[in-house]
Image (cartoon, rainbow, N blue to C red; front, side):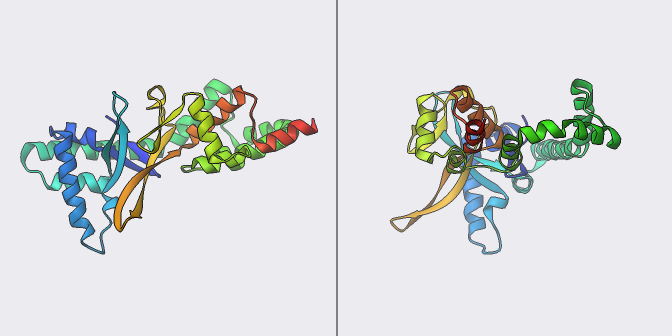
Length: 254
């Protein structure tokens, strides 16, 4: 059981919450739908601050609904419970969220120490400046590619297929067809989903969006790529000698 990250905030999968409170997932889903409906009746409350609609792919390859619970959502569920189970759930989710906060606070120094041990990256300002000076010439030679990584590959947040495709001078449709032809994604129920072997790698997230059709409102999940997923696509295309437009120009000049 672990915390997930959705658009910069920590969340728990409703399947994990159901397990934590010893409740069938379908029954927890039913309760959350009722909670969400009550919250929607108040103009001052946003249900997405508590419960975020999402989907997951089952072992059978089916796309099924679930929810992502924020810390407020967990508190909401806990407040509906009494007795021993309620206390145990509260203790578990509070420990998880606090543990993640501590990890985030201590991660920078731990990462720096690991880089120094494994790659000899300097941990002092003078050492970093010296390394920067030594690398300056190499960076200038590779400037187009470096610029691409700095401005694109390290850009935080989720990316649409359209945004990634533009880097290669492609349309979203062309990139989706290429990914489908190479057995990375496939269409199911009108949505693109990852093949099972790529699930759980942190390449994608499903972002809910509201829609209105025939005077009926609803929420659908749109497949978006994380920066790890974007790098995965970049590497896959590179294996077939397909590069971003800025790198193509660099190759032509060479």
